[in-house]
Each structure stands twice: as C-alpha cells, then as structure tokens.
Image (cartoon, rainbow, N blue to C red):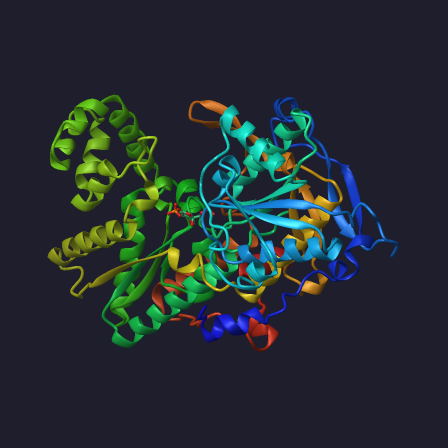
Length: 557
Ligand code: FBP
C-alpha cells in the first residue's frame, strides 16, 4: 500500500507514556481510593447499577517488582470505536494491543467493526501485528470503523453478550464520548446481572472536549482538532490582513459546548469569538449578538481595518434564548402536524402553514431570518423529527444579519464603509488528522492504562490519565468508576442515567483569560498564526498540551 512520506515517518514515532507504565506491566499495582458516589441522584443510580455503583477511584502505581500472575494471564479482548472520529483512536488500540502482548504474548485482540453495531451484529476482525502497525500514529477510525448505534433494547444487550461469548472475550473496551461511555456503564452492569464475568471499560474520546471533569482532564482528539482548526484560522486571518477586504465568519464544530471555539480563540486572537455558555447566562438576543460583531466592524473601519475574523461555536443558536424557544416550538408544532406538512409541496407552503400555528413572537423571529436559514430550520430534521441544530449555517445567518444592520446604519449616515463577508465551517477537517504528539501519546497511554485495568479484573471504569500538562513521563494513569460521573437526565420523555456533559465554565481560568483580552482583539489586529501541527522538533513546538488545560492547571496564561 502506498503511504505518504509523513505517514511513513509517523509509523516510526514512539509514543511517550507515563513512567509507571514503562516497568514490567505484570508487576504493576493498583491503589484504590475511598468508595465513590455519583455526581447526583445517588439513590436512583445505586438502584440501577447494583453491581458497579460506588467502586473506588484507582491510581496505577509501581508494584513490588514481583510478577502478578493475574496481570500476566492470557486474555481475549474486544475493542469498539464509537461516534465521531477523533485523532488518537488508533493509538488507543495500539496501546491496548501492546499492553496485552507485553502482559502475555498469547493474548488476542478483536476489533468490533463499525461501532457498537459490530458487537450487536457480531462483526469483527482479529487485530494482528500487521494490522496495528499499519495504523500506528495515524488519524481516522478506518482500522475498524465507527458508528453511532446505541445498545438500548433488551435484544441488543442480549445480542452483545452473545457476541462477546462467541468470541470468548474477557473484556470489551469502548472508546467513545459521554453517550458511548454511558452505554459502557450499562453494558458492564448488564453482563454482571446476567452472571457473566465479561468486563467493560470505557475510554474518553471526542474532539468536542465536553467529556471532562475533575478526573478526566480532557478527551483525546481535542488537541489535534483545535490545532488543525487554529492553523486554518491563522492562515485566513493572515490572508484577511493582507487583502484587507473581507470579514471571515468561521463556524467551528463542537456540538453544544464551546471548548473548541475557546481554545481556537486563545490560539489565534480573532476579533470576535462567541462562547455559547456566556450567551445563555447573559441571555443575549440574536440582535445583541449582531450588535457585538457590528461594534467591532465599525471600530475597525474607523481604524482603517475593514476586515476581521469572527469565530462561532456550532451550538450557538441553541443558547440564544429566543432561538431556543423558536426551535422548541417548531419541534412541537412540526410533530403535531406531521401528516399535513408532509402533504405540502415546498417549504414556502410549510412556512405559510406554520405561520398561523406558531406564537406571534416565534413567527416574527422565523420571518425575520434569512430565507435559507428559515428553510434549514423547517426542513432539516433528525430521525426524531427535531431541528438539526448543527446543520444550521449560523455563520451565514450572522453574516446576513450584520450586512442588513450595516446597510441600515449606512442609510442613517452612521457608516460609510464596505462590508464583504465570507463564511466557513471547520469540523470534519480536524477529526481524522494525524494525531498531534500530545494525542498520539495520550491515546497510547489510555490504551496501556485500559489494559492494566482490564488485566486487573475491573469493570465499569473509564481509563484515565492525569497531570496532562506535565511531560508524558510524569502522567498519572488510573481508572474512574463510570457511575461516579453520572446523573439522571430527561431524555425522550423519561429520566435516563447519563454521564454529564461538561460545558465551558465561565468562572474558570480559560474563559477568564479570554474575557480579559477580547475587547482589545475586537478593535486591533493582533492575530496569532500557529501554523501547522509540528510532529518532529523541539518539545515546545511539538508536545504542547491544549492551552485550556495549561490554564486550568496553572490558573493563568
Ligand atoms: P462525538 O460526540 O461522537 O465525539 O462526535 C463529535 C462531532 O464531531 C461533533 O462535533 C459534531 O457535531 C458531530 O460529531 C457530527 O456528527 P456526524 O459525524 O454524525 O456528522
């Protein structure tokens, strides 16, 4: 198979990992903490997770140096990649594989194909040296594929157990985000309920950075994704500063949370960046959001700088209270009139039909939106019939509204400049990039840690690695009980146990660092140009962890 020069060079990269994992793995010890509680709803969760609730936090420590036969026994494991791609996933599998072979060379690893459905439908491939070596330090999830199927129904749980038994698995590692790890917790509990000793361990994956708490400092994939987007933002900013004629509106992936936008802002110093969590707390209207962009446009035009960069988190519209209300009303109304709407030939008729059925405020807002956006709100639905917020072209919505506002100011003689805007959406560009050294090291360390937890007989845990702002040698591997990160949430009309998503904390150091300088960025040109990810060279260029992580751990820039 032909590979690029970089892929060839990356095959030879040796991921760095915690010092404690470099000793003979079969001599390692686990240090348990006190029993744990879930973050809320303790009584309900204790009842739902009778076998796995309340287990202690685990730290992996140096052992006595004596071989522990449990850790050296022959094992057969299954691994699943779940949800959206995140750079570093192949290295988790490589770390798991290497740990497994270091523990006992006769152990085997199966990849379940296409995400959780590989377990349900019993689709797997054995992962050998040749397969693993072809994917070391590469991006994407193409080694075994991924998928978004949830193991939900009693039949799916039973089929999962049947596959695990058929492959004679001792354990399954589920590499995924908050929902997939919730699934891992349910599966671990189910297996024990069925009297099966098959263990389930989770691993924190997502570019969104929203699987994060006291014990999970960041998910793998975030670092590479933000470094990729920041390179592109920096390049665009430099182009803008050269041509001096365009305003670039850049929407960034990340679902509801704005961690990606915040990290990209800290890395590139755009003129405007919205943090959805702040918009919600301050209850900004769409018009106030537009005001802020216009204020920067006017100021920069006065300064003879008729160009700029605006960063927009993917989930912004959900956090603008009036838009949120409109989306909820639309979801309800569309569900109530599903049949009638299906019979209408086009979206203009949908709009007219809905017009009389929405509240006056919702109707007014819908009608004030640019036609393309109104159309996206009406036509683009997910399988549950809800508006697909991530598909809404928020960058175009804001460009259109700013343009409208500026032409009004022009008519009033308050603005005489030109305004040319270009829209971009960065998302998929960053999900399958070659993992940065940080993600290559972190993914590999998570895989090795997962092996240690599995070989030690644990189930219902997420592999974790702490102290990530330090060099990899000083990272601390361990395990967090999945139930410890859970609470109950209303989902599809019922209370369900879920791992809590982490939104941007407005009281924490990363947001404060951004808030302290953004007014200056709005009026001046102080872009940073981070350039492409550096894979070979000095550590300060190649191994830097995400800035939000450094800020959280140091409390300052
Ligand atoms: P995960 O939550 O599975 O990690 O996926 C993250 C993400 O990249 C989001 O940022 C984005 O909104 C979504 O996936 C896109 O999903 P899809 O791959 O189905 O288009």
